[in-house]
Amino acid sequence: MAGEAADAVARHKHLARGALVAWAVFIYFFLFAPIILLILFSFNANQYGTLPITGWTLHWYHTAFSDFQIQDALKTTLSVALEVTVIATIVGTAAAFPLVRAHMRFRSGIRAALTLPIMLPGLLIGVSLLTFFTSVLHLTLSNQTVVIGQAVYVTPFVILVVASRLEGFDRSLERAAADLGANSYQRLRHVVLPLIGPAIFAGALFAFTLSLDEFVITLFLIGGGNTLPIYIYTQVKFGITPEVNALATILIAASLTITALAFVAPAMVRRARRHRRLRPRPVTET
Image 1 (cartoon, rainbow, N blue to C red):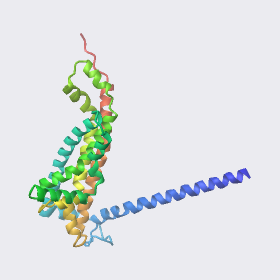
Image 2 (tube, helix red, strand yellow):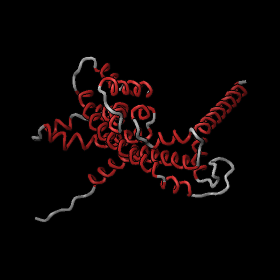
Image 3 (spheres, rainbow, N blue to C red):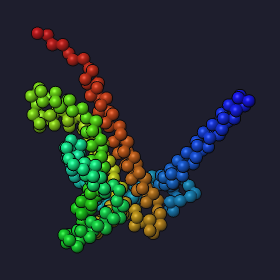
Image 4 (tube, rainbow, N blue to C red):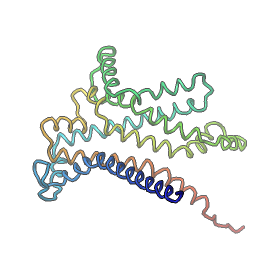
């Protein structure tokens, strides 16, 4: 009886494990199949950008980059993303220090307030900033208003990344540097920043990726300008073309590359430092 019960339990475990694996495969297929199809359609020779696949070509990528509207949208997208990255990295890193190290009352509430834009829908951020810029400040919508709006949304991500690294930072290293005569600036320059540098770099890459793909806030604040996500949106309203598939594939590839770099770069920096620290130093004759 005990053996039969154990066999029944083992069969149920195998069935449950198989069901979970099948469910996971279905979920991943449901999530990634449209992206895979979009990438395949970008290389499809079919001029309608859909099935059937009649051949393989790079013509649609050449056509996309030959379009002056796409070139202008790409320049605007990269320009805005670079400005947003610089602002978010500087502000986010500076805000992370007092958030972690300062003995403030209501620290949890302050952290929640700083990260509030992450939890708010982009629609609300876009509408509120549009009202503030046009009705209160009477500003003309331009690329700079987009930079401000995206920085409001992106900076909390940098704060979270840098703050998490600072929370695990060994403060005894700073105290040791102070005992050796280093002042506050020297401790920051030679001890703190090199150790949290990978986190700052990762936060900057996340900021650039988020800005590159941002659509909702940009749509409210761009005015007469154009970015790649907005250009794709305007083209999709008239039908999905192979050029749109090619542009979307480029955005996907750029986002995945930058995200992967954000994860890989800190590990590579740590490995290089470890290798340099373990490398034997040449012995000098006296």
